Image 1 (cartoon, rainbow, N blue to C red):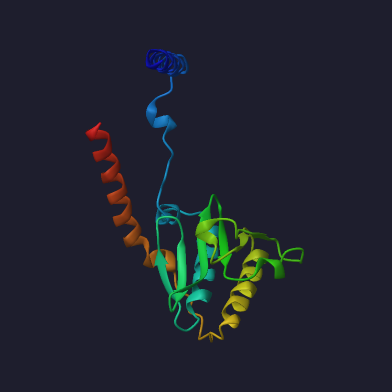
Image 2: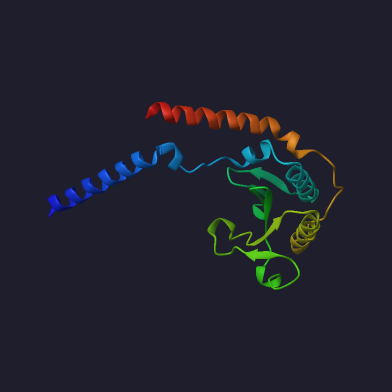
Length: 187
């Protein structure tokens, strides 16, 4: 029976190789393109940069809120609790809030429930930020999120957080390119 399995595996491998050769597809074309969060903020469009700066400035104006950038998103926490996550998705931002989705679904705000996704279980309410109106609505949801734990807001500073993080992004991208080059050399 093992001979039959080996024969089937060899036949499948030959079929895959023939298909790849016929369609002129390389292995690099089939690999997923995983880039870190800062990569998408490195050369953003004007509106994405503005929206990111406004939202990050408002979030960091609350007392005790800290920012942590991971490879997928920027997480805003205080006392080990995650309150808000910012994620770049194409030409817009997805903002995830630590609010109960049932309170906002069916209302005037265009939000979605992401409680079924494990990494967004602590911030299940998602809103896409594409325009000035959605920025104002996101600021309203930020205030609602912080009001749940009675976190007070200080003065909002008009800083260019994009430029502040640019050096980090450049270093991260150099490491990203370096790792990709080494990966290709090892094969």
